[in-house]
Image (tube, rainbow, N blue to C red; front, side, top):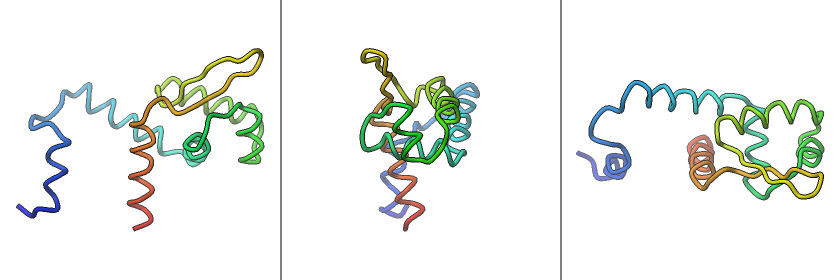
Length: 109
């Protein structure tokens, strides 16, 4: 076994996960499979934002952004909090930023 592959084995369980778990993993990658959602994740990677500001940064309509945020929220990739009338969105946890960061690293290598 080559030493540089060793760290991969510590992250994955020895046993094949259940079908249900594998489907959830595949679904997660489907969510990452949309460029608009990836752009939203990139914006939220740096700081929490409201729909209006995300729409402005990505030069898209607020309704298009809201639609994608709903999907990201259903998939538990994004979380939200209300402040007065404004809802702020952020990445759900550090796993999301690390998956995203690693994917970016892989592509840029």
